[in-house]
Each structure stands twice: as structure tokens, then as C-alpha cells.
Length: 549
Image (cartoon, rainbow, N blue to C red; front, side, top):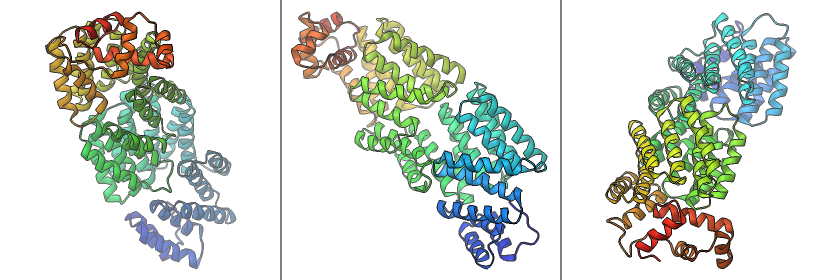
């Protein structure tokens, strides 16, 4: 913050109010000072009060005026500072990268000939974030280290620690997981301890850490930090921080199966993130959408995902719904689009797409592509080294094994995943994998074990994940041996399987029923899943024993 020895008492009172986190009082003090004399310092303070009050237009307007005053008075360093924050506002709050680039350019030119100053460090750390967006990890690490050195030299903890947090993100992207999480934790500790002079980068550092925890499914670590950040946001009256951090907290509660608590937290998060910060709202919308999907409220989930399609998780959510609706082709298209958005260094986020893409490709009959995606998922799990990602890789491997006719191997992988997820306190995920295991055990005619897993799955699912509940109930409907009259097939699936039993190919079935061949492929894949089989002959034999044919 500027330190003008000639500041008026009213301006000084404004800065004191900002330090006490009394945003409205600060705004009143600075507004009074500006009405008397529109100094650069008064306008700069007014811009920060507006920033914390979520009045983005007033913030930008005050900063533009402060920039002009500083330029007129020859205060190039202060003008550069305003240019930097204006660049960040246009990029982060308005989603206008072209305008932001112009302001960054002005800031760079203004500080180029100055003696070493903190503004040069801020320029470097923002450049590091731009490099991260472009996928240039080497440049990001170099600029972040440069910024941290400047902050340390000038004793500006907020600059130094935000640069350290940025280094942490870059290290995570480069595969240095523990080192990256260590730096993010250090920066967040400094923020929560009140060491940052400017609260904005303190909030950003915490958000970067929580995002990294969720991204890598480090839910235990994330839960610990959520409690700390929530208390900090209350102490500092940071409304936007309550929204963004609550979005991550809601995702963690969802993972732990506490859906009622997650709903309360996520609804509050959506409300807390002002519509004046449109680039941030998707963080809460996609997580509320995922909760709605798990609750079986698909239409509400679709609405939320479609309102946040700029976020990669929105595409994943829509793809999951397509799979639940037995449309793997649409799911595959959405997931491929998601992967195109994510370069290789976004390894953990790519895993979100890959685990569903394995399922979609298998349902479409492309076992080779499914296996390649499963292998990439396994490499990501080894790199990130978190139990939930190892579990996701095990599930994918199990599905591929079942698809190639190795149900015994599939059972082993599903059991491995369940063990990992039990340690990760993820009851809904455990239940979903139990459904996979129950179906596979049924295919091996291990009926008692299949029933046991299906019942455990239903108990774990409760009212959530209706698609998995239906599959578990289908396993139970045929328990106790191949009991005639008990089968899990729909009328259309029986019609398709009956024609297959007559010896018709998928193309001939499609012509007979006036369907697309793709639709028939989908029905066949679902028949295999419901009957716990992996071949046409086995499906016909099983359906015959059940009295379905």
C-alpha cells in the first residue's frame, strides 16, 4: 500500500479502515477524500474498498483515475502499480485478456527504467501465471523465482509468498508433487497468519492450494485447510473468498458422502460469489452441478453445467450424465473436447476425463482405445501418487480386463480400488466400485459374493447415484442362481438380444428394428453389463437360463 507522508487525515483513516477489514467504512472515508481532492492515493484506496465490496465497475473506474493522476504527477512507480492491478482486474474479473495485455504492457514500460522496486516483482509473478496458462512451465518457474527474490529483497511478504505459491503450482504441473504442495502450504500458512500486507494475494494463495488439493484428490489435506481458510475468510470479511473456498469445501463434503452438508455449503458458495466476478462463478456452479447429478436431479445438473461450460469439470459432468443416459458416443465427444482443452501438464485434471472415457470407449466397443486411456490414467496416478487416483486407475484397469474377457483379473482390480477408497473415506465411490465388482462376480457365477457386494453397494449409495442403484438392484434380481423369471433387461434389450440369438449381426438388428447401428452397439454393451457377460454367446445363454428368452 502507498505510504504518502503528506496524506490527509481522511485518507489515512481510509487506509486504517482497510487494514481493519471494514470495507464500507473505508469506502466512505476515501469517497470523502476524493470529493475534496482526487489524489492518486485516495483513488487507489477507494479502488481497493470497491474491490472488497464486489463493486467491480467502481474499482476499475477508481484505478483508471488513480493511474491518470499518478501519470500527471510523474509518479511512474505508482502508475505502474495501478496498471498492474487494472490488468489483473480485466483478466480475472472481466475475462478480457486482450485489455489486460495492454495494461501489462504499460506497467512493463513504466518500470523498465526504474530502480529495483516491488512492482517489478509483481510484473514477474503475473508473467509467471501467464506462462502457466500457456503451458510454459520453465518460464513460469523462472519468473516466479525472480518475483520471490524481489519480494524478499524489499521485505514484501505478500509478493514473496504469492510468488512461492506460484512456484508450487508450476512444480505440481511439472510432476514435483510434494515440493509443489509444500510451497503452496507455506504460502497459505503465511496468508492465514496475517503476514500479507495485501489480502488479495493472500486469498489467491489459499485458493491455489485448495484447488491443488481437490485437483489431485488430496481430500484429507484439503479438508484440513478448508477449516483454516473458512475461519480466515470470516475474520477478514472476505465475501468472495467464502464463495470460492466453499466451492472446494463442498466438493470435499460430496466426496465424503455428506451430501446434505455439501448442498448447504455449495448453495452458499453460489450466492457468495458475486455476479460481478463472472470468471469465478463456474467454480461453484460445476460443483453444485456434480452434487445434483449424484442426487439424481439430472435436469438441474445439466442447467448448472451448461451455465459453466468454460470450466473443464462442466464437460465432465455432462459426459457423466450422457453415460448415465446410455449415450456413450455423446460422452466420448464431450470428454475428447475436455482433453483438447487440457495440455499434458494438467495431468490430474486430465484424469477426470480419462476415467470416464475408458467407460465410454468400452461401451462403444473400442477396447484398444479404452486400454490406451487406462494406461495414461495409470501413469498419471503414479505421477501424482494419491490414493484416490490410484483407485481410479485400478477401476479403469478392471473395466478393460472385463471387456477383454478376464473377469477374474477385473475382480482383483476392483477389490484393489475398494481398499484404496475405503482408506480415502469416499463412501459413494466405494459403493460405485462395489457395483462393478458385483456385476463381474455375477458373470463368474459367484452369486453369493455378487449379492453381498450388491447389497453393500446399495447400503453405501443410499438415495444417491440412481444409475448405480439400478445396476446393483439388477444384480440382486438374479441372485440365488440363474432363477427363471428374474432378469434385469429392459423390453428393448430383450428385443435386441432375441434377434442376436437368431444369429443376426448388429447391422442386421439395426435394420430389423429401424435403429442406428450405434444404438444397437449401445444396447449390446448395456446387455453385457446387466447380465455380467462379455460375449454375445454368454449373454444369450445367461438370458435363456433366466427365462428371458
